[in-house]
Image (cartoon, rainbow, N blue to C red; front, side):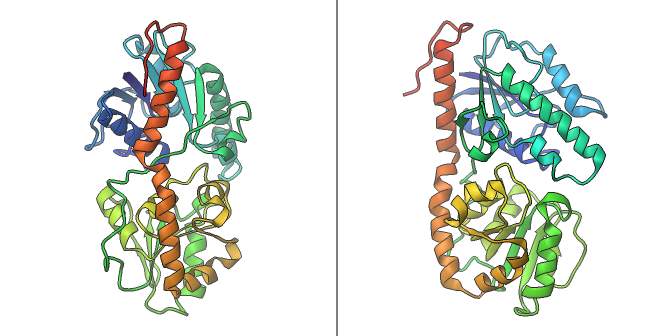
Length: 353
């Protein structure tokens, strides 16, 4: 198939999870033999296998300019147009089926961002997402909880994890000292500050050699804490493999890709009960879900309990296999084919066995 993908974000310029998913999915589809062209204002990532077309958006109102400028693209050469956002003006993609993936809900995020201006921006984007579900031939949500915000959308295909990058380390590769990994932001809904406070007050006093790795750029220095900033994929994957425990205590995750990256890397997951964690971890079957006030004590016990960590590693690895990109891409291939077979603008049928 000749597939066009749309994403405002890409790993080359932004840490937004939807951009990573678009990038990985495009590479995975190309490996399956499809022709893939990705339209984005972001630079082409160095590991991109797909064709990249830069869409200029200027310096301000980038999200809305990107959506408007996509109207100027000639989509007639493509059989599938697959958007990861900002497609709400594409009422007809001539000659192509139009698929939209919802990676979460901006309306939900508007409840968790702190500033009024940002709340209004997210609310406006939430309205555009609703419009996008009406424009696309098929809208897909990445989780059942995401469907709650679009109750007329029934199709769910989970996010994926690159198991070639995120995999368990060899025996003895774990860090010698008890180590916790966090990937997110210190402030706002990712709640890195909550984890750092729990580490200082409850974990470090009980386990003096414990370490906390904060993969973020906004955390302050603190005893036992290493602030890593932005990391290349290879280094991030190495930290996942070496850490004893991964913790992301977000207030909201539409899905929570770092949870599946940790599980695929053989690292136990601790989360607070946000909707993404509850679904990805199956309400605690594949990881530990704890209320914020119990976060420090729970992590302390887990660091001191090798049998519990080994169990979580085993079940987490089992769970991560359902998110491997070959599994996820296969589901999208079947969706594309079914839409193309009955699409009024496409004459030929495409069969995926």
